[in-house]
Length: 333
Image (cartoon, rainbow, N blue to C red; front, side):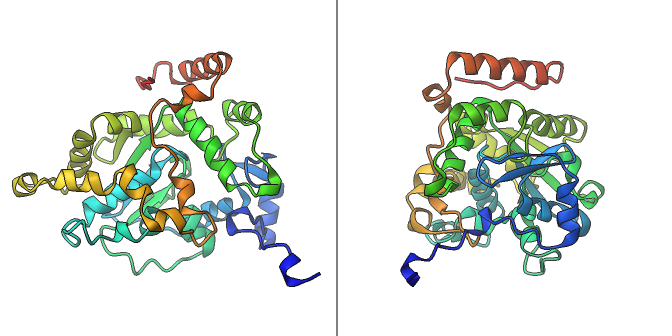
């Protein structure tokens, strides 16, 4: 076989190398289901993870030491994570990078500037070197509240949680995972993965348990957790960005308001701007995902193009049942 005929190596996000006996033993003890992209998802502490991510989850729980000044951006997959990372980075670094015409976001994907704890840092190294991160350290995670490292809860670090209505979350996640599948894998049948989503079998799912965990904590500790909704951020971006700045202890001063800094940050971090940058059109993460996969439409209400009336009835019934009595509601259009 010539070198041109050799199969290409799998990108990291599709690799399921169970490196240690300890990890193999853990996986063998856990419930498993067919994955959306990888072969399997494993249920750990009530939520579903890929084999590779689970290594990062356990390592993060064992070794991550949160600082009082840390900020964690928390989301379920496909809830506006990329947008939130861009805005939080621009917000916190605006003194260091005042000119948005020469900004790190113009040449770096937001996922590179704000790395995932369990998916990036602790998946690649059991004890990663975090000394290059200066205060306030900014990280992201898909971890459910009950799986956070103990130091996150005992320290003064702050959490920003962003969620999205389950209709758009599901459709966006289905589209995203199809982009990550190799050509010979084909696309996931919509009905099949919809059924999995409804049963809670999706990355970091069940969706409703994930959202409710942070919702309830945000009500008890509003100084610790800021709860945001994607739909509200789209409808009132100026209001929500100012709210985020207040929560993080870096509100916009009158002089910044006069200079329209809020508008500059929102323009810099807009879907239209980020998705059209060269780095996001043609770049790749070190784990193999193409940057363009993180930019699809960024709209509210795209579910209407994919979900049948029967699907909507089932999904809405589950949502109503799960959120009943919590005070949490999702607006849909």
